Image (tube, rainbow, N blue to C red; front, side, top):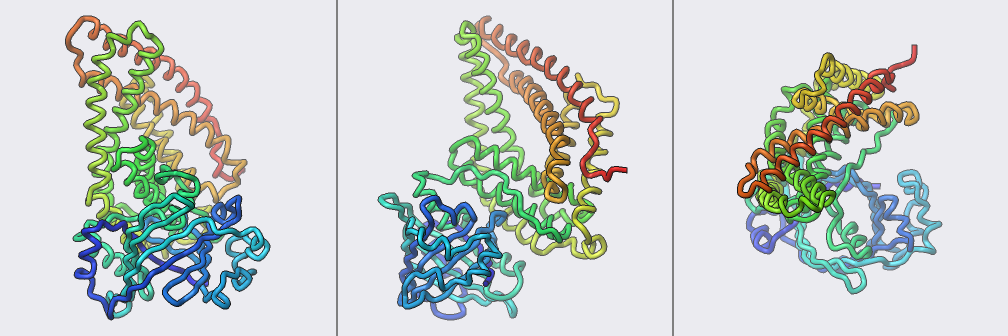
Length: 508
């Protein structure tokens, strides 16, 4: 088994023409035509296990490869792979090390062999060259241009791959960033195999990427856990950026925001490992990315609320029309700013900087002093987040929107922390606490939407007919009535939550 470490960028035609001039290759560029047939069972057993199996024609060579997906990869993937010459130039899964693959993936490829069928193919022209980054770091750069096809469905391939052949990740990633910036490259989060499966499913674009909690081994250290969790959150944010930039499903925006929030929450949950001083290279950049995305989401929610009121009370719809039209204009402007932010070089620079930062692990010195069982670290981290939330709620006036907002932030950090460390505790023990926590966060989130709705309504400043002014007044009344009901629910839910024993505390 080998571990393939690579980073991939999507490539514009203009950038493709300039790559050769930007790269100081250690030898001549090689040119050849590559075709791959990807195999799976009719029920896509391999895909569901995160495995890609292909038969490659690379010039005169015939290779067969099995790769294991890296779900937490944040643009820089490290994937286990088994690659070998195809026996007699023909595809034959019996040649793979059966027991080794079974131990790593849980799949018995030999038993699946009779059911394997070609699912899709890729064909592309590849230009590749060796690159010497420094005395110890070597890489291969490859420019691929062609297509992926499933039946009659076809999609273009235009990307650049950098594979680390020897040396450390940090200089490799620094080199990748130095290439990406002048060429205007954007990280590519979708593999060729994922694109092929998407075409098989007749989907035109990747679905919004939700959180994929990394699987941590029983002996994982806090440092390993942080790196995996931070990388998974970075992947969630980055993988949804293209969907936001293209103005597609609003779910892309939501999932990108969730990814960025998880990044911030991970820094806080692991504060005992990663001190605030160590986060300086990325913390400020991270904060600056969030406002335009949050503003777009606020106008989305506000417009949905106005539509709901107009739908529930049709007699008010005519008067609410002008109000809704202006709100939609504001939403349109906010969405444009979000698209610009998601498609900006600033975001790509942040993603690459964050990748270098997490692989450099500036917390190594502290990690050496606190490394141990992840469970003990998790319990201490969660206890700190829990106590800060209780302290924030002490003596709180539930009618105070600003106080509720500050508590909501504390509860959100606690909920993300519970998710980060869930694997360190028995699921049955954590479930009741997590349910109460989720219910509280939902109520606090709804109340925050009401507070934001009031602010946005004030920005619209109703004008024109008295009917429109009355419509705006009715919206305020509706928000106030819902707020009263939610505050009652919040007080009750908080009382129940406060009495719930945290699942990480040992029973005495």
